Image 1: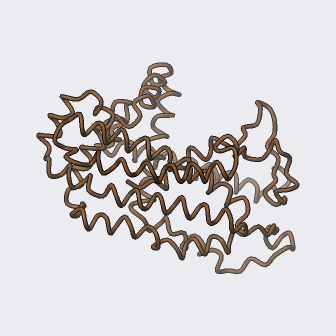
Image 2: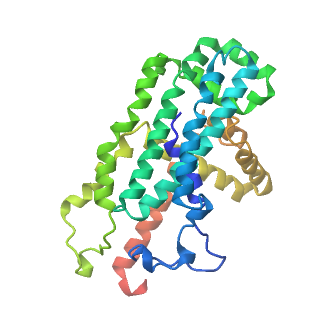
Image 3: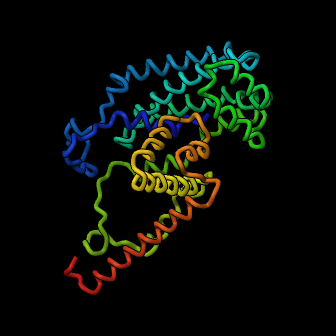
Length: 325
């Protein structure tokens, strides 16, 4: 389990959405105390107060005690497997909620040590939770595919976990023994410490203008052209490939809707309704995008080529006649 990335959706749920036709004012350089209440995230939608958050934090810690009972022989029967997986999901939601509240509050003011501490407590609970569940994937591997398939067939409650269980089997070569998995989970507590410190220093609340040479505000040095290379995500777990495949898939889905209309629209909605019940390649194939062939990528590259050509045409026209634009 890796809980941190999945807390984003819950965090976004607390952000006010403007009414149709209503503009979105820019308060990015405005001290929070001067921002209208209607334009602030409603943290009380998550917890009524920091004290209520602390009470839930302690309750969640106490709830971890149930794991010892649920974990004993959890793969002995499909029912026990479902019991543990459902309990785990409930705990994931509780911990993600704790993290979302603390993270949003700390992001409002990087200099607020109280909320920074709360965020750290939530992250620590995430790490401890991941570490205590480190036995699950090795246990699934010990069952083997035949017994996993039999459990899925025997217990309807396991249906939502089908893809996750089968994905674990696929990752067999990349899963260590329980003790080693536990150590790997615990490293989350310190491996990202330098990045966190950098973020606090970079993002601490100090409004500043940054418009470039032509505005006479700040000098943009030549090295800024290489700033993209310090983004850590570019070097992680095929991160950029996930974006590339997502863009290629979305372009294919959009093109199908524009060309076919209602049938393609229904395929797309069926894809959304499927949630995580299929592997991504299977889900996209059912929506009409087959990534087992090069066609989606080739079509996306052709569209990019068309767009670049269009931009070059506009640029050339502006150079010839600046006043025309």
